[in-house]
Each structure stands twice: as C-alpha cells, then as structure tokens.
Length: 434
Image 1: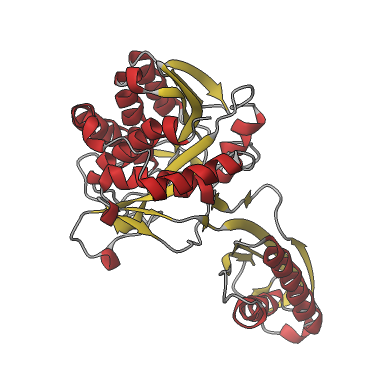
Image 2: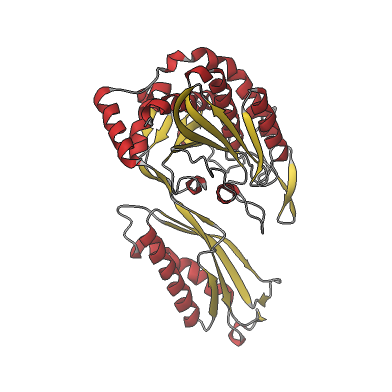
C-alpha cells in the first residue's frame, strides 16, 4: 500500500493525473446546498452530548436510508455507518464525521441557537455545538447524498462513519473512535484510506488547511494529589500546606517546557486546568488535587515529559514536607497524534485543490489541539484536514475559537466541506486503484 501511494503521488505531480474536475458535479452539489444548511441548523439547535446522540443518529440513519444507502446502527452505542457501493470497481474508503456536542452554554445570537440542557457529571449544563460537529455531520450527509446520485461514476465503496463521543464519553463509559474500532467497525472490510475534516477558526470558509505528517498533537490527561497536614489558617507552622506546595508545583512545572525540552523541532504543551482543595477559608486543607493536559508530537518527548513532571512534583513536595500521589498519564484519557500519511496526502491534495482552487488550499503548521481520529488510522493510511469556519473577508484574529460559547460556523464552510469530500471520494477510485 505504501509503495503504491508513493508511486501515485509521484504520478500526480509529474503528470497532473487523477483529479476529476469539480465542474463535473456542480449540479448535484448545488442541489444539496440548502438541505445541508437545514440539517446543520437542526443539529445545532438540538445538540447532544457524547454517547447520547440518539436524536442526531436517528436523523442520520433515516436520511441515509432515503438515499438508498445501506445503514448500520448501534455501533459504539449511537454510531451509524452508511455503506455505498459504486457501479465501477475500485478501492474502499471511509469518511468520518463526529456528532457530539459540548457542555457549553451558547452565547451566539442565532435564530437556531441551542437552548438545550443535559446532565454532565451530575450537574445540569447547557449543551452547544461549540466545536462544529453539527457542521461535520451535515457535510457528511451532504457528501453521501451527492455520491448516491453519482453512483454510476463512483469507483469502489464508501463507508460513511458517523462517530459519537469524540469529545469523550461520560465518566466511567467507553466511547468514541476507540470503541468503534473495538467493536469492529472495519472488521472484514478494512478501507484503503480514511478521510476526516474539522471546521476551524483559523481559516476562512472558502479555504482548506492540510499538511503531511503530524497535524494535531497527541494529548494526555494527568492528576497530581498533593498531601499535606491540615491545620488552622492562623497557625500554618503547625501543619504542612498543600496549597502553597501545589502552587509551587504548578509554577516550577512551567520550566519543563521552557527550559528542559528541545522544542525547536516539535512543540509541546503542559497546562494545569483544575485545582481542587479545601472546604473553608480559614482552614489549611489536608490535600489539593491538580489536573491538567500534556500535548506532544513525539513519543520519546512524551515519555521524557512524564518523567520530568513526576520528578518535579516529588521534589517540590518533599522540600515542603509534603508528598504526592499521581496518575501520569491517566490511561483512559489518551489521544494519539493525528498523523497524515505523507504518500496519501501528496496523492490526494490535488483533489482538495480541484474542489476549491489551488490558491485556497493552505499548508498549515502543526496544531496543539487533539482528536480521536487517529484510532481509525493506526493501521490504515489517513488524511485529516481543516475547513475554515470564518466568513471570507472577516478578521481571523477576532474569530471566536472552537470550544468557545461564541464559536460559530459560516455556512459557506458546509459547501467547501461537501465539495472537498465528494472530490476525494470520486478521485480515490483512480488514485488508490490497484
């Protein structure tokens, strides 16, 4: 597979071979534009958290069936897979979209803004598609609709994978891409390539961003519990203060990235996001718990960072007469590096350029956000790319980022996403042909 992709990528650049002109399917894409917008608005107004995408997955399955696409449901709880076989022989590919929303209260003034609420970790929370998965689901449905109408031109087979719980399942549950793979979503039908996209705030909605190699960081969650000795706040010398010790661990840990790791080639991030401790303002508590995230692109750097964080926590605590318990990393909170197979990316980038124009396909640097898409691509070549979420002409510096309560998606991104995925699917039959 690797050698065939390399040969095809060379042929593409040497001869311009392979891309089916985007102008060959304008009617089909135009005909689904408003439907895709309507789907996205509906999903946005009715968001659902991970492993609870019951309404969303029900709509997805019903719409796929209307298209004449074979449908499989109940994969990884609420996952849906549509299977479309073209009339011409060719390879099998998979295209993935995530469906879940986030526990965020929407602050965007839209006529279809979310008012939804749900339970999250025992608390009632607002629910919002603050990451754009509503757009992803609508784009993949639109892609399926267009390709079902172009079945006579389609080579091979397309698996439309609608994934739940990309943002993570509820506490104590399994979910997401890892569970889909565990339950055999590709068993007996392994695709030759897997494609995914994400709407993102750093590009305009008529632009696509892609790169070969590492694109999104691997992420790990960690927990450090600092154990001291409780005492009255008026007499700190009679105890061991875990609050001050935790603060020193947070501060000292920042030198791991800035002074101890070689980040000249690939970046790394160490951030603390949660601090829990104490019940009363005038009592120094018995313990404080810190939780945070580590982002890396290199396995060796990742392991080194773990060791340095453990060493820092232990030594700082010992200097204060405290101790630490830690889980570094937490085994149920690991995302792998999103890595674009270089041969596949070189072979398929011309399809993205055919879809939106070569000048609108940007080579982008690695990004420190993380995804569970790599669970699909551990043994299968994959390509993942960004579609801009910001209206053309708008100042990107002012755009609200993904996961913000003010994040929004310009609807032009839906058209860009459908064009890109349709082009990839149609061209894959030639570019990945045996």
